[in-house]
Image (cartoon, rainbow over all chains, first blue to last red; front, side, top):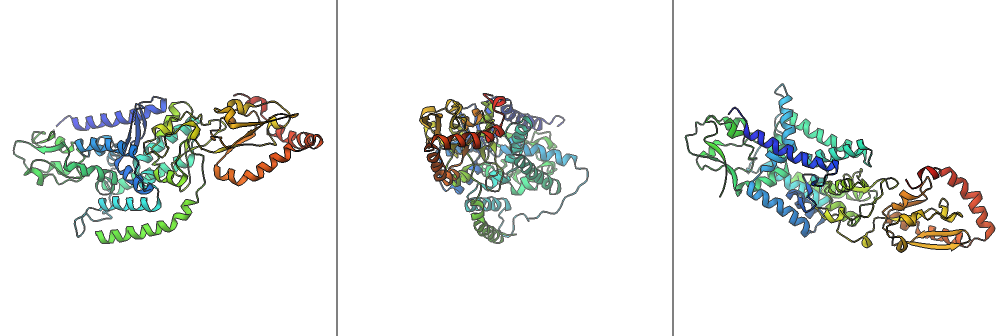
Length: 276
Length: 231
């Protein structure tokens, strides 16, 4: 396919969301906050589902209004699946740029082997481990400290405030930028590893892929089994085994449409479908 | 690494972190935006999403900054009350997505406690200033006045919300009023009260020498009285 329409649409959505969030720096009250927690049009609060799990465990209490905010997001991704990673997460763009500027194929072997004896993916264990840590130290450890999304937005806001002369802590900007840099270096040396195996936010949204209405599907026509789709898949999904059962129900699929664009049959066989 | 090894590693990490908790807990107490949960609860609930901070910015107050430090990293606090005080607009607690800031009325806010420095305050040194009480959003509820030959001496009672508007409008260079966290205030309370009593009970001569010999040079040194006035 000469025109990568999915990539184009994804970038438009990503820049749209990022732009709307950046407008708040210019005192437009449409999208306030960041991707982990936000306020839209001074009307509705949204809260990341994993962040909600973390604060519930860390504070050992359940706040209903936070629950509603998270339930909105949960409902959204129950319908659309793990689209967050492919369409909204700024890391998708940044990581792609890193992989593009990398001229030499430098990558270290994976630190964790996929599966292990019982076939559990390391990411689920990492997510559980983070929840355990959060409830132990009583701080939403991942979302507040580590999360590259939080740190990306925090660097932007605090950097802007500092540059504009408003109260801001330089140490916070530095620390956030350093953590973010750590993720970028990680992507540089272990390409795709964070998104594929570790990110707990992605893992959480991946759970919804099993029931989501939006998904990729093999439609009519004979698949050539050229495996072009698997080669370009950012998350390393084994797509071809799904050709028998038509619907691709893999928790790693981020619905980015790279496979559709790469399909040798010009996207006639692999398609993105919405419906029950 | 299989599941068992991983769970073992996570468990030991958890135990290690549980051991670290006392150090974490002894973090510096900060002046939080209004409606904040008690410090430990707040830290467990705040995810540093930046809604309060950016809402404050869109309303042109800019009083909230993100804090540094191990335990407080990335959480909101009022950093510079002298230039960017909280105005108690009560927008950030209304819209906090995690409810780390609870939606409350102004009367319930308890951010900190403002304390007038008797040495620097013009109202306690023979002048009529009262800038702080005029700037206070809750004026007469918060201020107790002690009228005397030396003027209408202001004192702030414990209904203070700790917003810091008095700080901004204090004409004395080093602000003669400071907002303390409740923890710090409670440590200083008894000493402060006895100082107030001592000053109120001074006779004319003692008061004269307290004001002119001891305080005036300090006020002049604090400076910037005119250039800052009603900025």
